Amino acid sequence: MALHLIKLCVGADSLQDLREWVAERSLTAIAAGLQPHSTHTTRMVPKRVEELLDGGSLYWVIKGQVTARQPLLDIVTFTGGDGIGRCNLVLGPEIIETVPQPKRPFQGWRYLPQEDAPRDLGAIGDDVASMPEDLRRELAELGLL
Image (cartoon, rainbow, N blue to C red; front, side, top):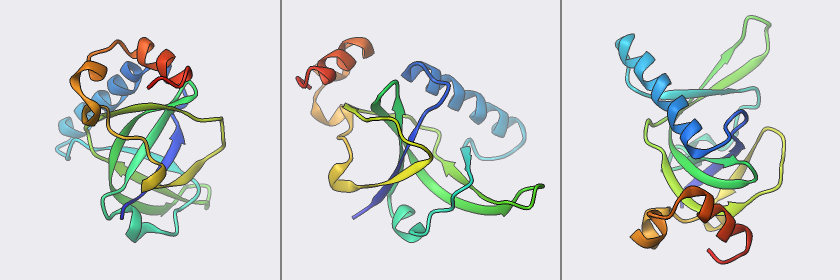
């Protein structure tokens, strides 16, 4: 069973903001002759790397709700110029929308067991997936989605 990470998507006000950020990073990587992956740098290095890389994803919290995930492809540790250890979370270029799930603010990232992860939006039907993001957000806040 896969293990995931969950993190606040700081600076993004919507799913579209996240998509634009990832697309920009992907185009930059392609222009440099690299794979279209994006990376997210974090100071804390996960200890459960094998579990995370066995089908795990990084789930993004946007404006108080888990709304999307990106497949986690690799975790690369390094030491920054300031001598502090960090890691890059290497993420796949696809943004997979999830059923909105309320989440309180927290710092850094947290492990997210598979059984606590929200389902992919496409898995619950086209009716819900075709709703505007704002409507899905409101329905989730009311506990109707």
